[in-house]
Image (cartoon, rainbow, N blue to C red; front, side, top):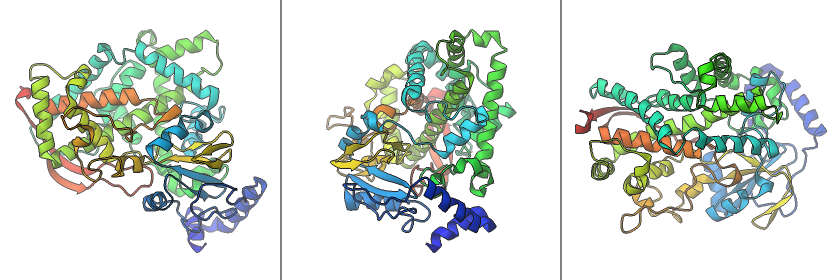
Length: 504
């Protein structure tokens, strides 16, 4: 208990007694004093009020979550204050669980609440795709996916947009002449520019100061860990700006939301962009129909923010890690070069249509995703009705975690689970082989909306760079950071890119 008090005191300082009184009263009113229900999955001790926090005052660590999996198997539980949490492991049970309508909702998360307030000034409780549920989510999800094809996604027009950005990015690297490059932010601007062209119908030059500032704010690590105890205090978002540990994250989020608001305002005065082939133009036309009040400016801003959050950081971090792993494993890099030279050659650029003819390249990209293991758990889900999972009774309102960490690292599912080895995705004849345990974008009804955009962007960036360059590790500042319970952070390192003959 002393650990919990110390943690809370660090958040609220001299207001600790008042905070504890208000918290206790709130929890009492909301009736969150229950412990473990009958036939609930096994796991940590769950006490009234505090849940399992006596054993994990700062929330669950990655070691604790892995320990629960090892001890209890495919389904295990704990609680944070009044929120019971069930961790679901094993590809079969994961896919069975998250294909159900009863598990398709997301809980109200601190990040989503803060973002909604910033965008709508408190007018709308839930906006976007990530923070909405039920019919509201289905409408926005369907609109986004339906219009992807209308924007040329999966066709030559979207590929041309992406490769134009990649060509400029490669020119920048060529001009460096093989000098060491700090890799932390290398891909950010280019990846965002691809998305910006898709969403807004334009791109920014690399020296655009305001855009570059926004880019950096998008990638400031904000502590919005949904398993942190403070995120489970009822209505915490109303006082979040007074919590020191969240100030930097909120500051960055405000800048991003403000930038997007200004861009939309400017967009609406530009007839060429409004009549162009981009997501914002399509959404505005849907609003103008006035057929559905759920399509409005607040919702559009929320969807756009979600698109960038879901599409930018994962793609950029995966590319950063891919260059690191290829530099650390030159034999893999060499085989990637050989396959690209053999299939694509040196006279033309790789295309997304080449993927099926590039089994080793495809296996390498997916092995980067598996070994990097960016999302250890997808965003939490919450049951919208009483249901059964793995033979256990799960009450309505229970949080659910998808244990992707286990699916991607368990030797039961992989030839070489603890190594970076593209053979994990190849059969004995060297042909590409899908593995059902591989779920980098989650699974089920709430699988990542930007999955297809991210896959195509990742493939094109990776293949174009490998066709043009040899990458060499110059200095490793810090390796892949596996300490966070939810996300793996990319390594910090310096690398050099030297031209192959195709740079000419």
